Length: 249
Ligand code: NAP
Image (cartoon, rainbow, N blue to C red; front, side, top):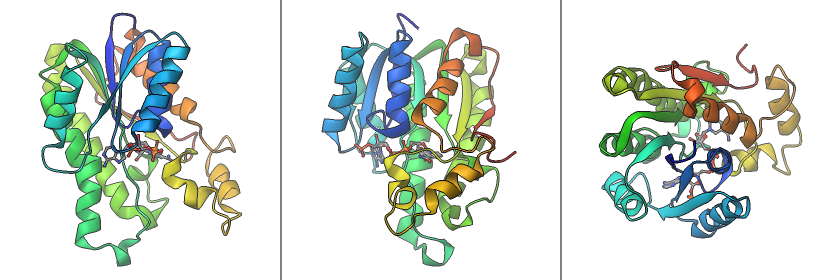
């Protein structure tokens, strides 16, 4: 990926950081996006540079009006076009169906579905022909394994439909569009549940969901994204790639 430029939304922490580090390791120059935690983004950029890679941090809060335009304005100050866009930034929910009010519903859709839609729409003008778009979905969009996070799952369902259709829209330009669906991965998004003091069984329960008997790591997901982003992934598009460690098998 030497000579390629990538942008990873939410690249400052968790799965996004893993993806940013892996793409940089493969030679790409990586834009590490963050929302509010600038220190985490700077730490990720520093880690990439320590390993001999190239990266820059850009901040833009997502889920608010004008978010995509603000993100690209920040990106344009550092780079002239891009080759790989990873729509990774996302939020979870702790509210089951009965407790979900309109503002929670709107916030989830604004960050997880609306933001990637408009980031991609404005980004398509900057993405070079032959480029890659990878949307980070979730196993819960294909199976009702965690119905308490139904609204979150619905946002990922929207992202999946976007992915399939966009592959046809951008295919004539040689751009591939795919979704990667993690299962349960050890990150901040689910730390309160997965590592909660009052929930000692959560880790073992999460590990047992996978056919491979463990909780996913950010590297597990980053390696799948790297395949799709690399030349080897050129003939895969419009797909939903299960990266749940067999949780849905
Ligand atoms: P995470 O550790 O909480 O990291 C989230 C990242 O997204 C951070 O870089 C954060 O930046 C950014 N972000 C969140 N809300 C934002 C907002 N409103 N505006 C701008 N940036 C925002 O989450 P993760 O677990 O790595 O999740 C990454 C993706 O994987 C998400 O789309 C998630 O739905 C998906 N996923 C995760 C799991 C899992 O088990 N972890 C499973 C399936 C799918 P700041 O810190 O600056 O806010």
